[in-house]
Length: 112
Length: 114
Image (tube, rainbow over all chains, first blue to last red; front, side, top):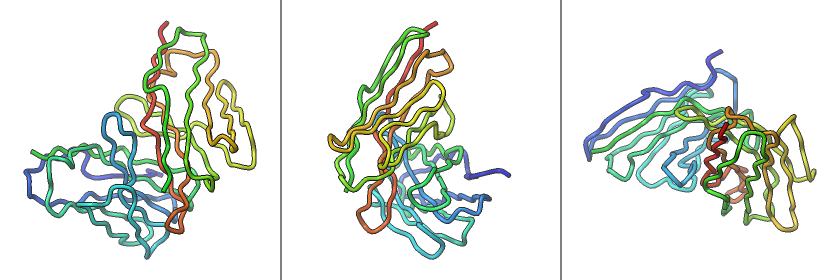
């Protein structure tokens, strides 16, 4: 039982490049989330998926897109990376909204 | 939407002392208030949570209190130990948009000195 698994763990992008962060959970959770963590700003919600088939914007969605591929997988895409997107990205899942969230190990992304 | 403010941003205590971290929230409809601990280089993990129908919850050395009227909640750690050193995040549920999602505070870096 791996919990929430994110790939990759580290990534360096050049400005304007695109990439997709992958996230999968094996806990049969309905809800999944993407957060970014920046120094002094806590965890900010980018997008979430309350259940398979639905996605919604969070606090800071600009510059990102998401896909809930199936119940297990929730990916985050940066279409044209910018230095302001340098951050640590965490995927999380929960049985349903408003319950304990379990986090992945994080992806440290640097955009140069 | 929900706004969560957390204080202090850093806290330094001696081993054995108590530590208190406070959060305020803006959405009177919020009904779920978890606390997460994040050790250096690790993922956040839930340590305790409380729902709006109770005023206090305790789990060994940690406790959370909730004042719905004043819209604030606090984390209390007693008999602190060096392994309590970490960043602590509070969160509150935000019901705008039809779904309850968690909005986090900016975090408190707790240092426990032997």
